[in-house]
Amino acid sequence: MVRFRVDLRSDTVTEPSPAMRAAMAAAEVGDAWYGDDPTVNRLQERAAELTGAEAALFVATGTMANQIGIRLHATGAGHLIACEERAHLATTELMTAAAIAGLSYRTGTDAPHGGMTAGLARRLLEPDDYFDVEMVDLLGAENTMGGHGGTILAADEFRKVRAVADEAGVPIHLDGARLWNAVAATGEPVTAWTAHADTFMFCLSKGLGAPVGSVLCGNAEAMREARRIWILYGGAWRQAGIVAAAGLVALEEGRGRLVEDHERARRLAAGIEEISAGAVNPDQVATNMVFVDTEAVGLPAATLLDRLAGLGVGAVPIGPTAIRMVTHVGVDDHGIAHAIDAWRSVTDDTAKER
Image 1 (cartoon, rainbow, N blue to C red):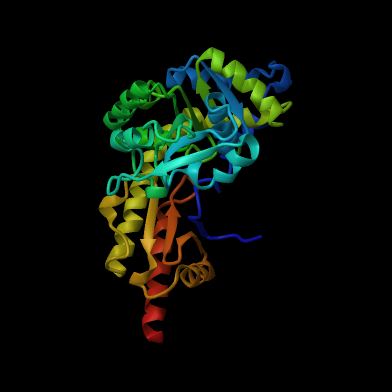
Image 2: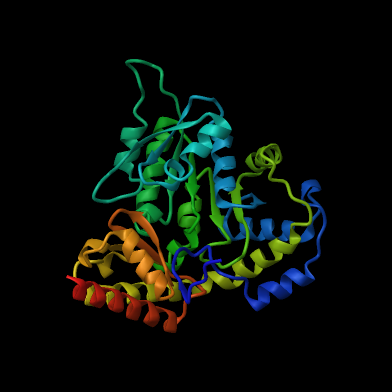
């Protein structure tokens, strides 16, 4: 198994904290299928309380939360979900929606802004009056926007998106996998986004640091139907309070420390840019992701990743000449320093080879 001294591949690679492990060991459990696991129920109630939702459903993964969420609104095979072209829903989850529900996507971009905007929403939701064959059931939005380097969908812009969706009579599902990063970075309340979505989800297993799980939220009626779909999709689990206990710790303790991840991401970006001018723009690092252009080093992404891995640093490719590094609770100041030193070593060795 690959082990890195500094694992920057994703914020999903974190290990449960001692407090999480203790909570998991002591968790009171029942049977979540029957709705009588008390720890799962407490997590769902707390998630709803914090986000201003009526109800919530604890599920295994972010993809499961999203797929249940979109199925609540887009019920007909051959129907469409409108998304920004780099959204997780329309990229990583593209085939998932097709395989499970027969759904596809209408996508576009509003460059240079990135992410969903009111202008893009208006274009994507224009009716197909000529052929009358396209049916857009749902508008999907994302915050933070992973495909754009963890940038933030501004709350003011999302309110405008909501107004456009209302005009078109189309609901909104918010993929908020890293929504709490947006909250930490802006100081806005989470309701600045959640109040304008019909359904939304967030991951416990990313920046918040839990080992497993995501939460889907919405009104009580929607969550009753979500629970039915969850069972149909094979998502119902039994004594899930064991993992829900870690989720509760993550939800209470993880939100407050996300600013540390953001600060370390900016420090990492600044260090790389100092060594390799043009590789990254530190001013564009909004949360915990750093997108790096490997052409500044003169190497393709795959080669650079192999060399970093040889020095104990993990990252992932996002294109032939681009890589992604993600900070999280498992990366401390020493880890950032080591990653910067490894980058310097790779660039020095590459320069000697020329």
